Structure formats: C-alpha cells, structure tokens
Amino acid sequence: MSSDQASEFSLVDPAISSEPWGFYKLLQEEDSVYQMPETGAFVITRYDDLRQVLRDPETFSSDVRAATIGQFADLQQSILKEGGGWEHVQTLQRTDPPVHSRYRKLLDRVFTIKRVRALLPHIEDVVNELIDDFIDQGECEFNNDFAMQMPGIIVAEQLGLDRDNVATFKKWGDAMLGSGRSPIATEEEVRANAEIELEAQLFLAEVFEERRAHPTDDLMSAMVHAHGDDEEPLSMHELQNLMHQLITGGFETTQSAINHGLWALIRFPELQERLRSDEKLMKPFVDEVLRWESPVQFLARRATHDVELGGTTIPKDSMVLVGYGPANRDESKFECPHQFNVERGNAGAHLAFGSGAHFCVGALLAKQELTSSFNAIVQRMDDIELAQPLPDPVHSFTLFFLPMHDFHVKFKKR
Ligand code: HEM
Image (cartoon, rainbow, N blue to C red; front, side):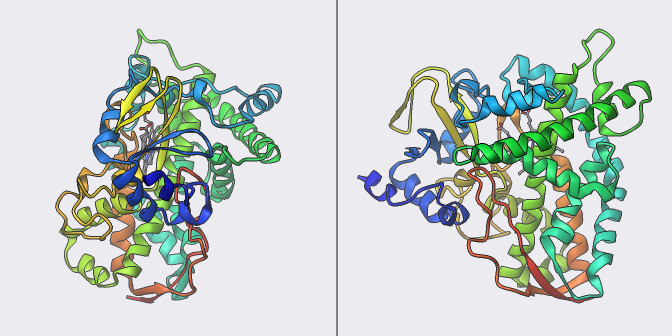
C-alpha cells in the first residue's frame, strides 16, 4: 500500500517541503487524506475534498485551539500578557459562523473594491519607484529589493508606519508567522518571536488609540471605526488579533506570489514578450502563478467529531491541514496540473485564496498588487534571467508557506 511509499518522504523535510509536487501526486494517487507521522495531523490533498472541508465549518472548525501542534503555545501567550501586551483571542480566521460573520462583516467594510481602486495609483507609484531604484544597475536581489518591499510598503502605510520602517514590519510579520514552524520550533525561537510580537502590539495599540481620537483614511482608522451605531466597537484584544491576521495574511503571501511570478517569467521566458504585447494575458498569468505555486500551501482546521473522508477516518479533535497547494495541482480538476499554462482556461478555479466563509479578505488587493507589479516589470525590463543559481532548497522551511530568498536576477532595461 501507498503508506510504504509515503513513509519514505516527510513534509517536515526542508527539501520535500520546498519541492513537494511529486510527494503531493503520490499522496493524491494513493493516500489522499494522509496522516503526518511527525505531527499526527491529517493532510487533505484533493481539490474536491478541500472544498468539502472548507465549506463545512460545523465538522471542520477554524477554532484549532484544542488541536494545537505547537509545544510552546502557553509560553508565547504568557510572554505577551506579562509584557503588557494582549494574549491571542479568537477572531475572524480562527472563528466559525455565526461568530465569524460579525468580524467578517466589519472587515468587508474595510476591504472594499472602492478602497482597492482608490489605492491603485499609489500601488503603481510604489511599484515604479521600487523599479527606479535598481533599473539602471541591470540587476537586483528581487526578493529584498522588490517582492518584500511592495506589499510591505502598502500594508505598512495602511497601518500607520512609514515606508522606511518596512524592515521592522517584516521582522514583525516573520515573528508572528513563527508559529508556522511550530512543529519543530525550539523554546528559544518561540520566546524570541513572542518578544518581537509584543513590540508590535505595543506600537499598534498606540496607533489605534491615536486613530480612535483622530480618524484618518487608513486601514487602522477604518477598523477602529468599522462598527455601526448599534454595534459594539472592537476591543483592543480583538483589534490586536485582527492586525496579527492582516500582517501575517497580507505580507508573506503576496511577497511569495510576486517572487514566484517572476521566477515563472524566468523559467518560461517567452511569457515576458507575450505579456508585454497582450494585456489580456495578465489575468490568466496571475491566476496561474497563484495556482501553480500557491503561497499558502496549508492551513489548519479541527475535526469537531469523528468523520470519514477519502476512505480515512479522522478522529474528533484531530488537526486537519487543508492543502491549498496540493489541491491546486490535482489532475482531477486541472489538466496536466504540473505544467504552467496560461491558456488552461480554468486557472481561476484555484483555491489559493481559500473557499467559503473564510475566502481571503485581501484577495482583490493582492491581485491588484500582482497585476501592477508584473505590468511594470514586463514594460520596463527585458530578458530577465537568474544572475546566480537559486539556493538549494529554493524555499526556507515552513510547513505552511513557500518563502523564497536570495533571488538574484539580471535584465536589460527597456
Ligand atoms: C497572494 C496573496 C494572498 C494569498 C495567497 C492569501 C491566501 C489566503 C487564504 C488561503 C485564506 C483562507 C484562510 C482559511 O481558509 O482559513 C486567506 C484568508 C485571509 N487573508 Fe489572505 N491571502 C493573500 C493576501 C492577503 C492580503 C493582501 C490580506 C490583507 C491585507 C489578506 C488577509 C487575509 C485575512 C484577514 C484572511 C482571513 C479571512 C477570514 O477568515 O474570513 N490576505 N488568505
């Protein structure tokens, strides 16, 4: 049986987690709901199973407290509390309907199409200013010089930080995402990440209080004032938790998609000219980037009762890892799923932003950031190629994401 073959690989092996596609295929063929020996979590790999899980919050709850896989979750919380910060409470992404609906309604008022449209000229300015900084050199370290800066500047500005502080913001985001490494995180790492998160909380609390007294048109202000006249305002605990989700949800993800999009342009260089000359190709290109190397490979749910899925019984209170990454490579949904194909027609059916009640609140903003970035890149740069081999493995290890680093590229200025 398959498990013999599957047992030869591990999702916590940095080499497999960086290049997991062959392992996903094996699992889909033979063990599509796979129990990770390292964590006990059940991994969902098929497209239809994923949709079923994401659309059944009564069986697969987003409140994963009872199924945590981190060893030091209590330590993290006590560092936040004792330092004058705010312990994590369950909001938005960690809640199920109907509690989720209250948070989501408030956030949907903040992340409107109107707000994204209003931001568009600014997004284009940021993209072009970043390119201005390296275009004459004919080369750059794309991850630091562009992919990290672009979403970082947009979200940081919305949070009341100025753009010179993007590095601080990145440090906060990485520390908050530290829990993504929790199956293997050491006590020292958890402690260091919690101290950094505390620093972020204390800063954000001051901005919230400032916006409460003096509203502006940024996102922090919108969140403090998002409630209607007959609704409770969000508490500081809730605001801090929502910020945690916006920072972790909006930064690494978009950075990763921008990196993988450029890497696709390098691996399939004919696309550089095709995107330049046919603007209608940009939308399918962005969708295919998100499908092919989905920035969020997995997130967690908890089984609320024993349930059978894909021939496997998942016991009550098990951690369930929903595999957006594997589902987007499922051949029962996408023909030749391992080929990057801007003509496939159904790339937009990808689950990179999730599905159901928790569908990504920032999807419109992210797609705009990607579209503006790649429009400017193909218009201003030509013959883009690697200036150095990528590291091996290409991605830093986290179970949940695909972060790229040391991405040196060269190009001709157009
Ligand atoms: C390419 C970029 C992005 C990707 C791939 C992505 C992916 C996802 C996914 C898969 C989910 C579903 C979570 C679940 O099922 O539990 C999600 C939810 C969420 N995303 Fe994104 N995201 C991106 C950009 C953003 C941005 C720019 C923001 C905000 C600035 C953001 C904020 C959120 C929040 C707050 C949620 C939780 C929504 C809820 O639970 O109702 N994301 N995202």
